[in-house]
Length: 235
Figure 1 (cartoon, helix red, strand yellow):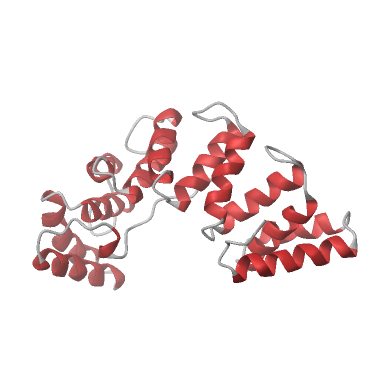
Figure 2: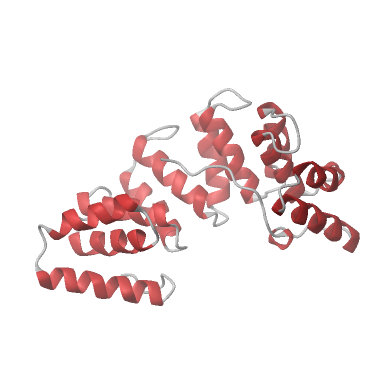
């Protein structure tokens, strides 16, 4: 299951402001959107988007995609995502990849989806890393490659992405793209379950039926160490 579109919430994540006034206008739009007044947010962000502000362009894409503050228009969403993505904004690249994957506002094209996911993933976008890993598992838009899927899942998991942690645990538990390792699988499923992923808890519990008490204890300790180190000491 892929991760889907999201809106940029902090102006500072992509620094292209030309003036303090632009930053203030963006923040006004952000405040409006948080209060559910999307029409007012659109009025603040559209001028910025037309000036080339990538974050505002992405946010217009989200609003057109959802029909918030404006008539729903997937093709218009794609247009704004493209403008922001072509400036190298990872959030928009991720969102654009979703549009191509789902065929929303554009012809469905898994290869193009992979291209945009990869661009965002290479910039460290965890959602894109997770989706790219998923594409390598399914072979959708790219040749199947379980080892490459593990690589991308790991990058996302080490950023705290619970879905990627669950998927990485599954790869270790089944020996796909990596040596089968019940202890490591348990660790990742346990961490993902702690973040609220129900299926991760079920997978962890199923693993325990074939693990020794010593293995379970090691896995639990490794999960604690991994989490307390902010996912640095997970091996």
